[in-house]
Length: 248
Ligand code: PGA
Image (cartoon, rainbow, N blue to C red):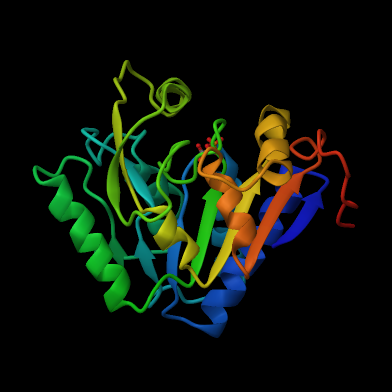
């Protein structure tokens, strides 16, 4: 695991965007798995800008879903699909056939999990996984206490996730369950970039980096991945016992 601290969320995001762009240049049919949320949104803005400036071709890139809210229509602007559609798929003209996304409204959610498991196998694994860290240490919807052996599964959401998740929705919404890739699939990605910004994340960042690696802090498993990068801004890093130097 390599830890980098950047002065600002913008600098962190530019750097993360650079990794995504470099991968797609090197491997145009790369398989990307992208988190949603306020943390990675700025990374995707920079990906779009860089891709347009340098004419990077995303027409062969493939997308695998990380997670989705159960029972929320894909068309709801707060859904994970909608977020990525607005920030990445539409601006980069990534077409429907390139995307394999969880349908949180599927009648058979087990079959939905199985089809993503099968797809990951068919595409020979995920090349790059971009993750945020939830306030409770979740990655995707792998909530504290989750088994690290699971593949795609339906998760009962932690109370913290139910409350925090409301920020993505404009109307009243009841968030109970999520559908998510499992820890074993996240850790099988060839490369992971995990991002955190802002002082609200400083406690969970400290716990992730300084407490024992365990399923009580799912994000801590990323530390064991041989090709993982953790990118923080100065605010998210402010409570670390040993402050790493800030990237110039
Ligand atoms: P956030 O969400 O980026 O909106 O803080 C992170 C997460 O819950 O994964």
